[in-house]
Image (cartoon, rainbow, N blue to C red; front, top):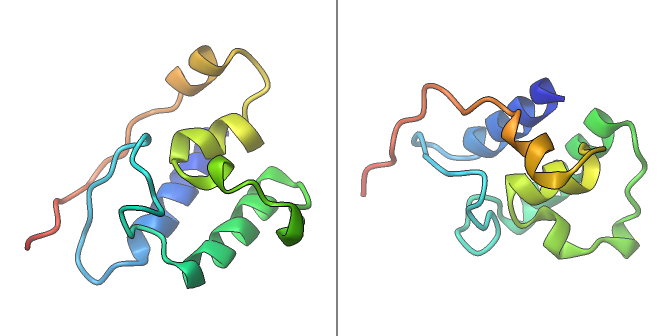
Length: 98
């Protein structure tokens, strides 16, 4: 599952012209890391990686606000804190210049 989360992080980062830094608890929607167009693509990616069908008309937006929420909703099968703690940190992040 660590590979799935890495792919999700890469997808989020790839949506920007300049490199961005974000944590797994940053609000992806409020911060603009994922806009409305990329949101649909993100949902499709999560469905593919988790091998689950995600009905667009039944989405709970809270499940997609953070990478951590995505992990807990679609990839975790054990206690939340233990499962998420096992995910390795991102690498090669560079903060976006103003």
